[in-house]
Amino acid sequence: MDWDNLRYFLELARAGTLLGAARRTGVEHTTVARRIQALEKQMGAPLFVREASGHRLTEAGRQLLPAVEAMETAVLGAESAAPANASAGGLSGLVRVGATEGFGTQILAPHLAQFTLSHPGLSIDLLALPRLLHLSRREADIVISLERPTRGSVIVSKLANYTLCLYGQREYLARRPLVARREDLRHHAFVNYVDDLLFTKELQFIDQLHAPERFAFRSTSISAQYEAVRIGAGLGVLPAFMADRDPVLSRVLPNEAMFTRTFWMSMPQEARQLARIQAVWNLLKEIAHKEAGLLRPAGPGR
Image (cartoon, rainbow, N blue to C red; front, side, top):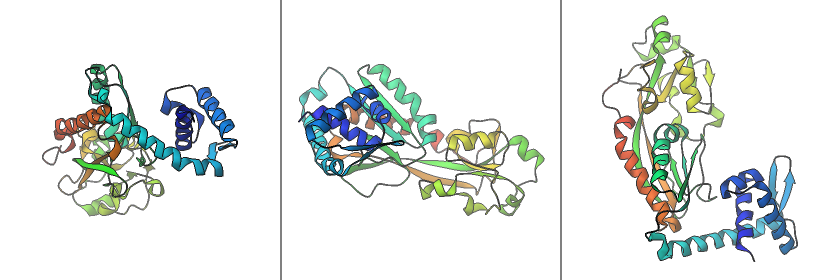
């Protein structure tokens, strides 16, 4: 049985769409479709149901999936054992890094892009998304999360702590009632996450300070929240590494409206010996160390 066909089957099962699987494998979606058709012909049964929203596994597909996942694990193990991985030929292949949106775009992106300039055979996909990515589904090779993984055969390492604070636009603060204590927050509008779409409890902050009657603006995106606070829509809890560098923003209740969260980094056990993944893993640690001043700024801020 052709492993390439099975690999495309696996990626389509995970992505749910031909376009998604094509992005994950670096080919055209027509190639994915052709490979799936060849595999279905070989299996003598349809493996996916084609729907308007994408592709859903049939019963035959669900039965095949565990066996193909086991094959993938074996292939990764063989790849990690190959001496060529550490040869002088340099790093090559694809590494997918999953991270929270703000940390991924503001801190990781420039460093990861710079790293690929030194390793022209290496490709890095940065999945900076406001949701949890799953190693078990092979959505990424390395995942940076706000909750420490407790399940699965994974390697876990604490990457860094970071600070979040309550911020407001300076002009907004100048024209609204002074905030000298928590009780004063009742006079202000707020920007926050969408509660029922919040992907981790680690991002629940506002209720610890004040229970607003309404939110002026909510979004699943921390970048969107940042922009809303920046134009004066209301107060919002933002990562210090995003907001402290912005002269338009100022901390509110700097001595008490401050929170610390932790970034955890994890990867599958079988990937630990892959040179390209280990190199990016080490790079991420270096980035966290280098950017410690941004992640955990000293003092109460401006």
